[in-house]
Image (tube, rainbow, N blue to C red; front, side):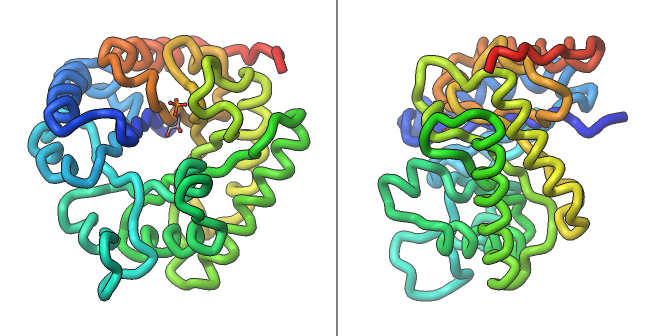
Length: 266
Ligand SMILES: O=C[C@H](O)COP(=O)(O)O
């Protein structure tokens, strides 16, 4: 049986606390009864704001939905005002920690060195990093693939130098120009870049078990147009309606029974 399709959701800073709990209750109810989840065809994970992590471990218990954080500290303990450490996130039930999102790079000045240190922090604390990479400006698929593979290689090399950087990662391919846009990148573009990232990871046993997913205005209707080499989706705005999450779970069920054809609309 092939590895489950990953379906990640970052709630970013869109919802208040009660909105987050209500959304999670509805998504948890859907997941708990959906055959894609109960049949092991997918692994769903949610990255809420920090204060919602603990309550969501209760809300989502038994639903099959796992929880992670949108960020973590580079260090594990000490005088780092406002930060949340990897050990802390692990202790409260996180399975994932997102690192390197374009918004953290653009708005909070995080560069490759910080992203690599956070990747290493996640790995050494038993959290799967959701490592975001992707080109800044529109580029042809081959050029985007070259740039994105180089970015991944650079970050993981630095993370390895920081220590504790063996283990599986979830690489979220997010072309920055497609984040917050009306439409995702084309299916051909996504498939080409994800295939290059997968090939790079497959050649390095220290990252065995790693997966490559796509984010950037992803929503219902996309997964069925992607090749099997794309291991899943990373959703933002288009997961705010729980019905959209259900619709994508339906697509995951369909994908398991029918081969997908990539539309070459690059
Ligand atoms: O973390 C998720 C991505 O940045 C995608 O967000 P978006 O789908 O709202 O563009």
